[in-house]
Length: 465
Image 1 (cartoon, rainbow, N blue to C red):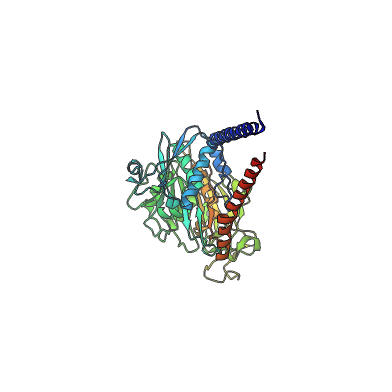
Image 2: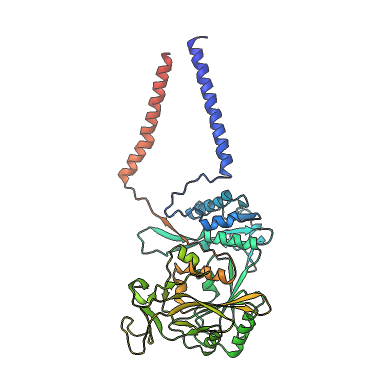
């Protein structure tokens, strides 16, 4: 065998081996991609990573969950790509999660198969979470909130709460039942069901509905009643309906504020639960216990089942424009303070006066801002809970939502879960024309010339072998 033939055989063998190695590596990567997420998250804020809370939920799954994305396959927007990647991470983390895409524009029957509030889906931009027990639909519009950070020097920004919605939906469909919260209306309440479902706790897995005690009874499926700073008092008959519901092991949340008028019947009922509502607005002189305005109080947090996660994660909450509360000793009722102002706190009797000036009628000392009361529901084996917050505005503060979500979960004996939305930043890459020409020259001219030169050198060497 001459030297040239020997070299040809060696070259052929090397080529075959290289092809075999590439095929094997490709097969291994394809197999691993179904079980291990090989994509790296280089996004600012790690918006694609799963939180520890989500991983705990996925680790505890005892049934399969189908995630069905109806988003059109033709949608190549960054939002669609982000959502697709997040859902893939759910599927690769847990073998109980099955993820697939079904383009609803090509399969319109999928829209009529699933309903929201008794109506078929109107468009393809929905994601379905389904088990043998039930399904839950997440709207893509609810996942992204635009314009929240307009003061930032970015071309476009939004918050993405995909993980919050997705994990809550998984909990919901595996449990097989809803938590129904009824928000009372008819007395000038400042917030209704829409505010709670769309702004305060979106993607929580809870169902919020409006309810008027003037005309309706409290439904049997009510897990919780919410009273959000009414302008007018409730009648004796309405309070009786509320008391009857609570006697069976119900949950009640009451939100007040410095501008909430005196509600004689409501406040009287709360006293039966060991909670006294005072007048005025709470302020604090301790620089560590207020934000800018002394009435935006950063409270002292008492450790209990509601706040242990808050304290562990060193999170702070704020109570703006809060009425003062106090605990009354009541037989059969266990009341405990969740948050209070510092010892340097004080109560302004006139909320419209200057906050940093102590005036006649004002009272010094710590005030309670938030109280929980519990009592056994006689003959039911259930526990009734009443949560009262002196501030309604605290529901609008982003950091407070973890605290509030934990409160709702605790009252309904649900797993405490709240995953903060992640900031999605889209920046344009500003490139001047000289840079464009330079890159074009490199790609169109330099790289091809280098490849041709390398080929020419190899050809010359082989000719002289």
